View 1 (cartoon, rainbow, N blue to C red):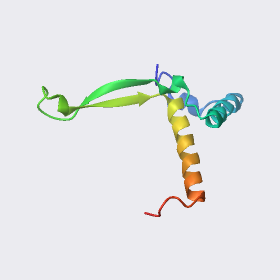
View 2 (cartoon, helix red, strand yellow):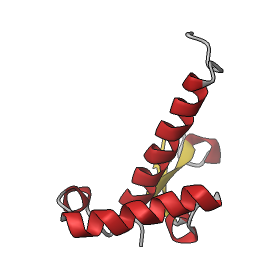
View 3 (cartoon, rainbow, N blue to C red):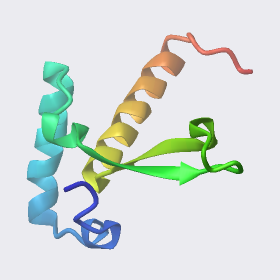
View 4 (cartoon, rainbow, N blue to C red):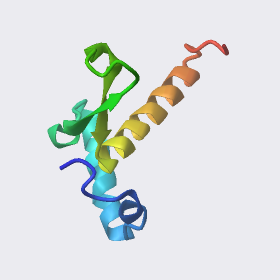
Length: 92
């Protein structure tokens, strides 16, 4: 179940767990595979405004697991580093 592990718990992970987690992320990068377990999300529907009977007044929100968020941030960091090193991104 996504978000069954709290962010505070993950932030206090002891170093012996960090090493295998880092290896898992690096292997995923190397193989260009996003783990299926991290693709799971809990979907909730948010009401935007009246009238309630109009389905256009609702929007879905995906609640991702904390590990999925960490993985996505790692991907973003590597992607931005690559794009900046190759001078692909414009300053604006």
